[in-house]
Image (cartoon, rainbow, N blue to C red; front, side):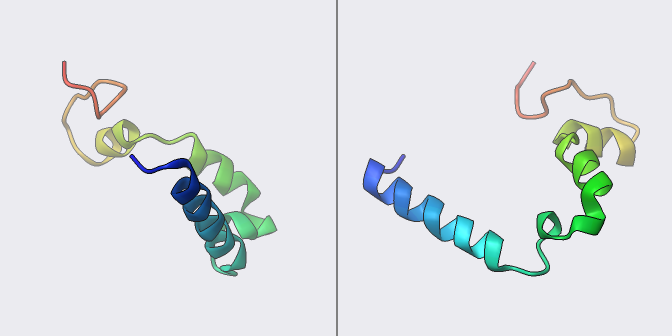
Length: 63
């Protein structure tokens, strides 16, 4: 938890870092399809694709 002022400072800083990074995936118009796929992927999806474990849809919640 941070206060409202620090929150604004952090959001602005990370926004500038993202927007100024020419290698950030969202800044490349050629990756539009990949971006849609990445944004729709959850941690549970990654775990399910790369292991034989069964996992609930929200990997961060305990059963």
